Amino acid sequence: MNLPCQHITEITQPPRIANITAPDSNLYFFDYQQAYRTAAQHNQVSTTHPSITALQICFYDGPPQVDALENMISLPFEQVESRLIELPYQLPSQLIFPHGTPDNFINEIGRVFEQTLKNVIQRRKMLTARIQQQLKNQRPEFDKNTPLRILLKSSRLTTVMQHCSRQLARALEKQGHEVFLCMEENDMQMLDSYLHIKALAAFNPHVVFNINALDTQHLHPDVFYFSWWQDPMPSITRGVTLPWRERDITLSLTRNFDDYLQHCGCPEVRRQHFCIDKEIFNTAHDVKRENKIIFIGSSYRDRLRKSSRENGALQDIIARMKAGEPVDETFLRPLSQRWRLDYHRVYWDLFHYAVRDVTLQWLCREADIPIEVYGRGWQDDPLVRPHFRGELPHGEAVARAYNSARYAFICHPFEINSQRLVEAAACGSVPVVFDCRHIAEAPHWDEYCRFFRTAAQLRDRLHSKDDLDPTPIAQSFNYDHLADFVTRSVHERLGWIGPS
Image (cartoon, rainbow, N blue to C red; front, side):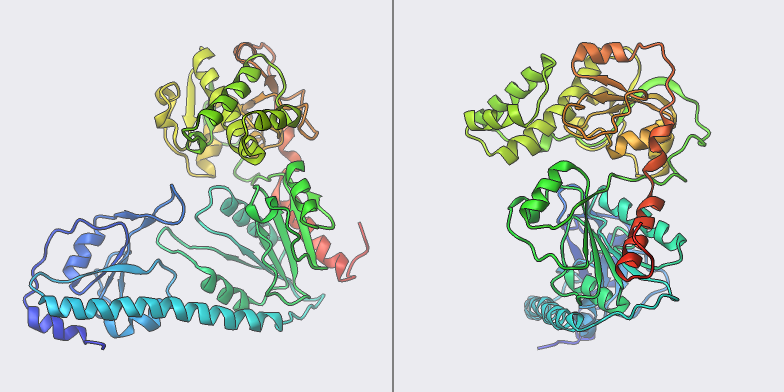
């Protein structure tokens, strides 16, 4: 039963406006003024990411209003189902009625609305399946004289991947390609699988570029698919053979991911380190450089659990680090067996926490120069908290921070060529780096970095007299090179150019 909203408002006129303690979700209002008052609070609602929120949207019954706020959306009740299917937002989960609305109407419309939301979800699934079948037969036409259409899929619910995708998209656009970055446009939107695949079908790309995913089962065999693995995703750590295609090109950030991919049957893996936007990360920022050290990155404290076995293993890792002994697989595998823990858990959580959080605690104890820490979660660490300066949006704010500091603190358990090292070096901030050269791939940039393995070594590195210029590190880590590789790989496979 679809009750017209005006029937409700006629019965309850004049509507009484109340203060609303907004729940953690998007809302649907039958009264415009109530919607306006709630939207003006700019409440944040949760998403599927534990620490990234969305701006609350207040849907309202009736036509668009000229004074509506950006997070207010006109949605006449009779159009809820048809329009919610296509709107790129989280669905509203609660109805807000004017005071005085009879309970029987509230209950009836509540039942209608609940069924409507179920219909929206079901219809999206049905439409997704239909488009997936369509895509299998949707062959892109390649023409040497026209630009390639390249789609990059990403999400604002990522802290690194979205910036990689955005910067690569810009580099590909500079080469003359027709590029579509399929991602939310603001902090209200949330794209689900239906909206992503609908956009993919409409764009009909020659090339799809995706980070941390192999999502090819619905693509035509002629579509090129680049996957760039930056994290140990469950899809590759399980070791199950994946459906690799002839036109799949696989990039990996580090040797660890090479092994995972090869165990999944990947025929060929190419190394691709993090890149930076050289137009942002450089020494041209008008900032005075001070004798201080900064760290940018989030705490891994939330990876810890209250477990005596895990705490015992963690203390063993920290003890070995304090002694200056190298920590690698030959140490961690026996340790995980001794404490009866999953090796993946020990390596990716406990080891990473020790190198990230514990070495930063060393810095806070040992340094006699100013320290600035930016990121998430450090307010909960009593040693780091006095130096915590909040979060920095990726891009120019990070570049200006590195330009302002003589040193940058870089702590990665197995990689020298990390994104932060390259960003800091490009901005002229000398990297003070946790020494994992025994397991890290070259180049190690020994002449441009100051390495430490113990707290005492860390203290000494902050008092070296040599004046290093680390900017040469960054010369090869840019998105133009990656864009060149994408273009060249496609052209070679198509026979438009000879092998490089």
